[in-house]
Length: 275
Image (tube, rainbow, N blue to C red; front, side, top):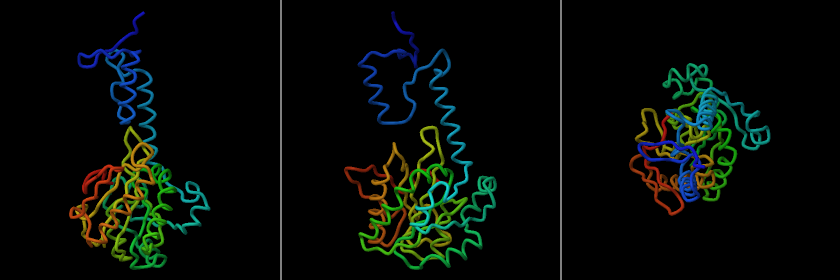
C-alpha cells in the first residue's frame, strides 16, 4: 500500500520515504538543525513538527526570561574554583533590561566599584560572563569554555584577570570593562538571542583595549558556540587564536580577520547575533 504523501512546491515528499530518499534527508539534517523537507499534512505542519516547534519556542522564551543563579546553575565548587562574583548593569530587572537596551550596556555604580576593587588592572586577557538573551546558553557552555580559555591563555604566558558575571548584560558593557580594568583584550561570553534551532548558543565578543564610545566595528565575534554549532574546545582555540592576532596587530574589529583553518568555520567581524 502506498504511503500518504504531501506536496511541497510541486514536489512530492512521501510520508514514508524510500531508503534512498531517507538517506538523503538524514544527510541534509545532519548538516543543519533547520526544519527542511519536513513535509506537511494538508496546509499544516505534521503533528510531530508542530509539537517540536511549540517545545522549542517555549525553550526560547524560558532562555530569555530565566534569571541565572551562580551557585544553583554552576555549582558551588565551580564558583569557588574560579572565584566568580556577580555584578549588574543599570537595568533594574529583566523587564527593564528587555525594554531599555542602553541600560544593559552600562555597569551600575555598585558594579563599577566592586569590579574595580576585586579585579586586577592591566591584564593581557580579561574574561567576563554576561547572561545576555539566554541564561540557558551561559549555563550550558561556560563551565567547559571558561577553564579551556584560562588554561590556553596561561599556556601562552598571558596574564588573566579574575572572571566575573554580569546580570542583565549587553555587549556594549565591554567599554566599561575596558575603562575600569584596562586589559589588552576583553572577552565577553554572552548568551545569544535564542531561536527555534537552539536556545543554548553562546557568543564570545572580543575587543582590544575597549573604551567609551567604541562600537561593534571595533569588536570581533565567535558565535554559535553550542553542541550542534562550534564545540567549546574549538571555540576556545579560535578565541585564543583571534586574541593572539589582536595582540600582534594591537587592534580589533574590522581590521582583524580571523585566519581560516581547515578545522574551523570563519565568521568575519560584524556577523552573528548582537545582544
